[in-house]
Image 1 (tube, rainbow, N blue to C red):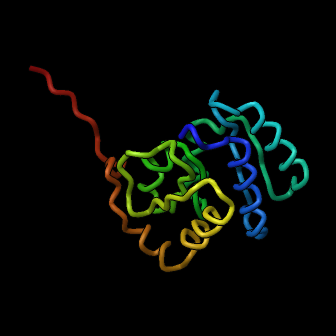
Image 2 (cartoon, rainbow, N blue to C red):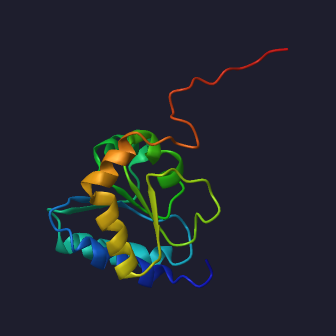
Length: 154
């Protein structure tokens, strides 16, 4: 993780996204992670050049985020949400870099390095019809989100 450069990794992601101009993009701001402020500036500039294609927003909130996930072709980034919540929707996740290294991941998660070529290859896999079909029936190792939690009183 220490070897990854947040801003250059983000620029590699943006360059890879440009290879799929037919896709609309929603990007939320990073947390207070290393390089977050610089990434926000890159993100704002990217969105300003493509206002009809890119929505940059600080946060969607939980309900709007899950609504967006349900309609997405893929969820891309290095957030734990891509491993924990997204597989329950049958949507591919592209997990960039080492931030989530060591966590359980469903078969719908494509791991890649922080280079443009690796991200591009992950996009090709995640957006392929065969992989999207696999994702529809994937088992989420964190649960499918449908179980009700129960409180045991002794």
